[in-house]
Image (tube, rainbow, N blue to C red; front, side):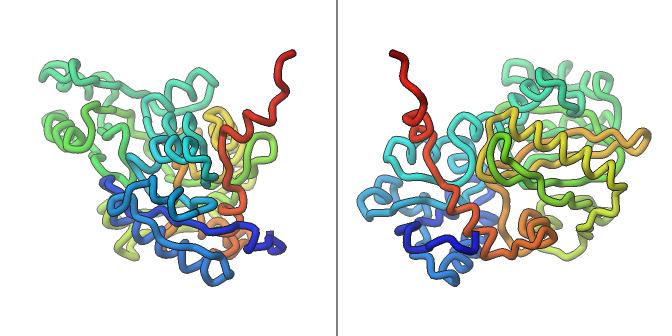
Length: 328
């Protein structure tokens, strides 16, 4: 990828900021990507959809977009669909894969259909959130358990529930960010993450990172604004265990139809070392604390080259469809 002709990439918009609850993180990611691409001579410019309409991308002659948006309206297929309509190639997964991956409940359904391991869960739609149904979650999933906002990232709207009497407060916190609620079995053990680059049979898993959080947990603050979390890459896991995690992550990535790049988060159950898929990010963080750059560095890919590789793979779903053989 070092031989990429940056002039052929054209005028590039780095989409950053946006309107989701992860706006602050997206601004940090996008700023890092922008500076990296500019350092390599790419004609890259910042573009915040919260401040300008997406139609301006076409009017201002942008040739492709690096999506550094996180969360809703950036990672969930909405922006991807708009760029498809305008014919502007973009980084990362297409409309369908982005939409499914953003919804943890839909992702779990697909993974379970594919026989991939993910923690037991209960989904509560808006009409299933009466007090008795919520109070039943600890009996269904055991304690401790996790309550999540199904369509948020960066640990936003996530609570670990240790006592049954705390379940209602945890659900109320989740409902601040999403009308649905996801209750999930808590897996005690090692937390790991594994990035992927590429598409289909050519997709490759990068080195696994083991995450060792402080006693306070791996929350939003510790993810992005402190140095209290330890990230181990190499992971220190047995080689066979790391390879099994990479195998599962590749299967999870391919099953959703992801492309370009992504990162899957998992827990390894301490009792039997069984890995469980938690979620997959189709527009991973690129901040100074982010994990894809750390894993890529362990694989010999520095931050600017990582950004360039992701950008060079930008394309449209519709372009792929147009290359398929047409029926006679």
